[in-house]
Length: 68
Image (tube, rainbow, N blue to C red; front, side, top):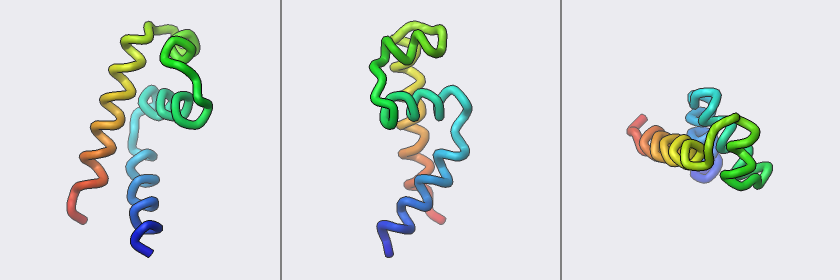
C-alpha cells in the first residue's frame, strides 16, 4: 500500500514537470536514448540535456519529499 501511494505521488509530480523536463526524462529513462541522442531530438547540446535532466530529478526529489 505504501509503495502504491509513493508511486501515485511520483506520478502526480511528474505531471507537474515542464514539457522539456518531462520529455528529457521520458527519452532517457523510458526510450533509453543517450544524452547526445536526446540533444539531437530537442535541438540542444548534450550538456543542456544533462542540466535539464538534473534539474528535473532534483525537482522531483523535492516534490515527493514535501509533507502532504
